[in-house]
Length: 100
Image (cartoon, rainbow, N blue to C red):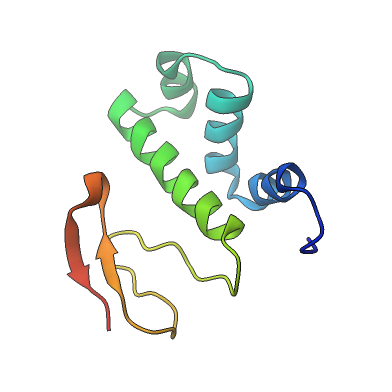
């Protein structure tokens, strides 16, 4: 998507690029506004697991929407791209590990 695209168009493209499971969670919860209990049953996970899937999807969308080169979403201990090292911040903002 080009830099001149609207934020809505960029978000829609980022949602389409998500893995199937994460896309279903985002569309079900944010677009269709379905209850988490229903989505959890559909995905075959508990509600806390569904919350983690949703958080993973939001990190991926945030990174896709960020200006500049894309970098992979950090999932706890997955190394970041070759860009400058930065702290890995996990759930609720606590620092988990420093990636080199």
